[in-house]
Image (cartoon, rainbow, N blue to C red; front, side, top):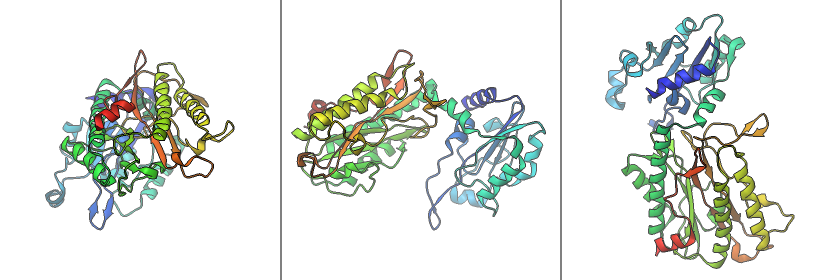
Length: 414
């Protein structure tokens, strides 16, 4: 079982007397008695494979114990079947299982006097009584203050390198998201609304038993200059571009793709000029990704190309601030989380790429109204984003099925 192997690997990275405590989330209320769809905490799922809310796993080299919700006939009629305490040992391969309500009553029995406890506070409550989450976090802190160590850095290093099964899930997620982006290109036209295009992603993802990995960005015209625009409710105008940042999640693993294209199917001259700068920056940045290369090298390359391109067009001067037009990084790690775990720095130096890492590459240019800039460029926001796997010999673009060259986009939209 892959989760068992991960627990063993994690323990091999820790001292002999380590005890790991890892918890998942509770369901979160949307309003009144309606909850958001539940998703387990990424670290918890990575180590246990258990998808129910309100659970805590405790394991060491000699013991694996799960605290979870007990069976409840009434609640199961309304909300679905629970695994329960009795079936947990066989199903989850745990040594013992208990009702989560007794966690603090018997946790001491699992932690020896000389143990080192690895624990990070949960993102939201998993605790089952009337006390606050913070109170319970403080209780663990006070109980094991002298031996408490952070867990996330160790799991993050493991999650940074994907195995073949993780890569397969990420490839499937990228393929599905790419298919949805191509569908958006073919269906866009003036007079529709951003939400009409967004609904195509909703439908395609759900039809494939998938879901959004994050709220989609469908930004037409000057809305594309708002980096995290999610209103998705404006009319698509003839002559404008539309920027779509959308990805899905399969088996918990995310894709993250951005494409920008003309609503009417044809780039105008100004749009072509800016688009070609971003595309050159992105392709050159991707080409630099290989084992042993600095993880900051793609950003350095993208910034240089974008800066030179904007200077050549007269949009910025040689001493201008690039961050006025390009204000975010060129990529982030991708995996169970869209902005996945793993530091890019080791001892204040950028770490090197290794085979099995997955990063996005997403340069962009965003030009707001400015009297110092020719008006033909106003309101142009362009980002091009792909998901890139580092391989032993270089890299592989997981999202390559989503076309991005101007001719390919225009031919598809024609």
